[in-house]
Length: 290
Image 1 (cartoon, rainbow, N blue to C red):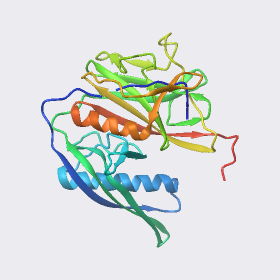
Image 2 (image 1 turned 135 degrees about the vertical axis):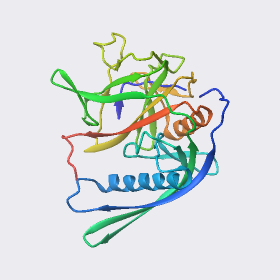
Image 3 (image 1 turned 90 degrees about the horizontal axis):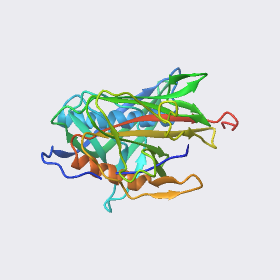
């Protein structure tokens, strides 16, 4: 969950259209007793590997899980599952979304948990190298920012960003399977995108770097909660999605289903768009972890 927030985007048509193909793949992921991983994380890792195999079988060895996972049914409505990080930045194709829900089975054999996943989806070949972007997520430890993807409830989040070319950026927080919030730019920004300049280093959500910055804190009422932070960058302008501003802090949000549909449309129309995500864990020590 996020305290404070904002919203945005849809992209103008592009000329050269890379091939979009339907793909399917399977994977097996083994978990031993000494591995520090939850069942949920292991399941999602297995799904990610299955998607990597699906892309590799159609396009080649290197993949980039550069979008949030979205299941698109016959009515074009989506739901969201989570990824555990990116597979590779050396990509031959981009996973656009699921066309069927991933299927995962679990068995216990030879002192190992065996996860087996099968996935179905759409992938788009990458014809040109995507713009290189660098970004880091951090919290404050004392007076120093420390890179992390694990937060205690109530901690402030910071994002450091830099790109090699001029462009536009936005950052969204995908909260479980229900709501998605736009963290950057602010809800008052009618363009729905943050201009960035080539080579300049940005410190988002830091008032010391920008007096107009919005301070953002991650919170949860659960013992632990998993969210996904999605960064979207393009050298091409993109327009705002339909959103709602609600709550005492005038937060902008939309359903994760609508966000997934909008993002998939953006990626299909803009081959230069870069979408990267990090899996965030928010813990609340005051809640018993049953």
